[in-house]
Amino acid sequence: MGESIGRFALRLVVFLTFVFLLGPTAVIVLFSFYPSAYITFPPPGLTVHWYAEAFREQSLFIQPLLTSLQISLIATAISAAVGTLAAFGVVRHRVRFQSFLNAFLVAPLLVPTLIVGFAGMLFLTAIGMLGTYAGLITGHVVVTLAFIIQSVSVSLATLDTSVEEAATSLGSSPWRVLRRVTLPMIMPGLFSGAVFAWVTSFDELPLTLLLSTPKTLTLPVQLYGYLQQRSDPTFAAVSVLLITISFVLLLVLQKVGGLDKRIY
Image (cartoon, rainbow, N blue to C red; front, top):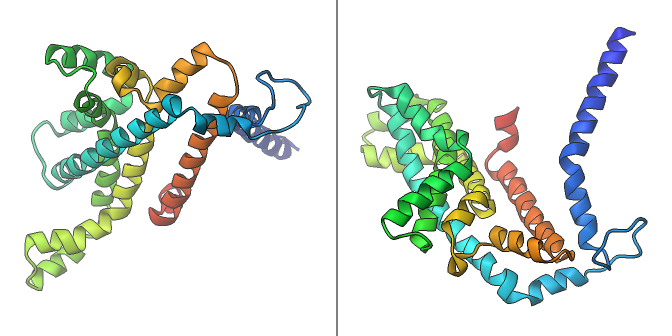
């Protein structure tokens, strides 16, 4: 009897957790198809008018979307290159103050991005780069770098080094071993970290609010400002499109990067 109650309670907690996590998303999806600008129940009907409106307002959403894509892709590429090198340094070379170095590299994951953004705003203002693309990309690299370092570090730590040793014993140069053996073996970890870094950069709001100007508006910042001025479902339609992109990326990550194997 007690075991049955325990299983029921566990299932209830899991169900409520899913409702808590997915409930707001379900409301946004439903609101994006509403024919009116106000939520009523039951819905008076469904329409895709607000999706067409989102694409029609190019100055409001399309240009910020392109800016977000540009900044997030560049920031992810830089983070992937720098983070992979940093992971090699942390895992393959033992240095003094190793614990401090590890904590420093993952600090952006622990510190709220609002604090990181405020510090970045002060620094970029001092060097005259506040509001520039370079300054904004630098801020995004700071908050995404740790994803790459952590993911690649795990891949390197669990890598079977005997494969590298075998390639070396057969006459391969260190560069050839790195390019033909090591990098392909850690590629799933690098890809996983890059996807999480890209999603984080693309969706970043607090840091971008502090580092951007009207010339460097990203889509999350534009949606935030739009929601303050209007309350029609256009913002919900754009949000659903972003959710769909993130969901597709996670599916690709599961197939290519082996996300399910890493979790289980």
